[in-house]
Length: 427
Image 1 (cartoon, rainbow, N blue to C red):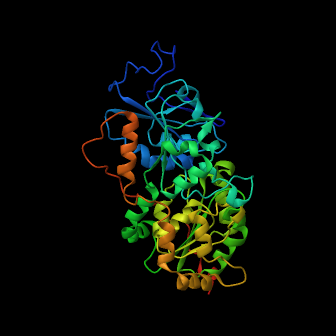
Image 2: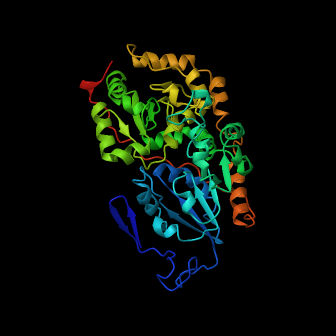
Image 3: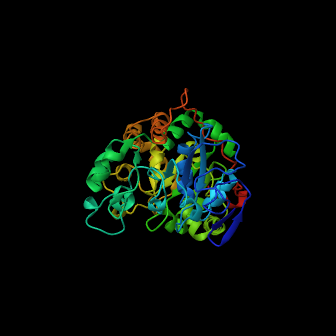
């Protein structure tokens, strides 16, 4: 088949289902070459690389079941660069969008709204980030504007609810949903947050992740995390990264940048890396957009971030969080991210960075950050059990006769930034 992605044609010979009339089989029928017939058909819709990453913990719950056939597609989206390549790298069957909309599926999994009304089958939706953070770009006062992913534009099409189920991470999100899209309350179900559970399970093994990154025991990892768009830390790279390069002593500190994959989707991975390495004068590791960001968070000693989900997850890690940028007008004031902004110190100009990191560590109160982290998931450690129950209910199948067996977070690749030579070390 040929998958059209942006301006590229990606050709694969993997078996798939064909549309009506193309091979003599009716729509939805199995190819004659299929070994396992009469499977429940699941479609995973990855509008972007971020959505594909977010959905991984959901569709992985179905992957071992021989009764289920999981396929993927990439829906039209302005930031879908890299999504198809990432799925093909898994060895997955990726249906062209034009073909996916002609078939009927037993379950459709999605983390975004684009194109969902065109698909045939019960849609299970989940939010694509943590903490109902972002507000729409326009509207009334901040406190009266709905969190973007809980508004009717996100869940409805022409007045009709599209999903049959909306999987939430926390009980308090039901209140947010009731304020903004009350017609969706009957389909909402609190299952927990997969990233919360994976990070929590990995934290006791922090030293393994640090060793995999190539960090020495005495080195401090400063993780710089940016979401995308206006108001993100990335818009201030030319002020933040040069300071990190000039002021943090080496050896002793390593710096890594986690930039939201949408930035690379818009500008290219090469351009993001070029900008970052130039502003940091090479004293930086740039994490590829396709890499799992969670092991980096587990290994960090300091987190410098903004209003993105990754910075919010940083409240779980037990290390100081500093905010380098925070667009209050764009953030839901009821969200845990807003609570983090009221708690974490802000990176300040005119003061040495090492002093600010030391101040953040001195002022760090674990109980304050634990209260923020508790708002990410109200089902800690129970995501796999809850989500699997939901998915099998929609599929109309009994669950396998054993508990879910989630894989631990993978060990990351070593950081690739060289240490600065002696002549460039700061005191």
